[in-house]
Image (cartoon, rainbow, N blue to C red; front, side, top):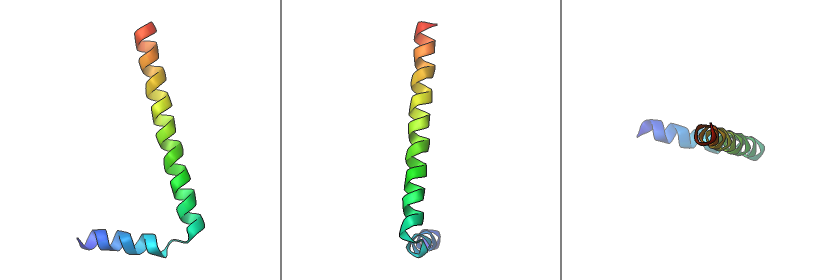
Length: 47
């Protein structure tokens, strides 16, 4: 529970630009994972 509170306090301390950068980074990573798994599955089916 205290860890969660620390994380919340930390996210509050972050400025808005930092939050934006963090969100963009997470989105990019998610997109990369999806694209990679899709191409991998495609190669598996076609290959």
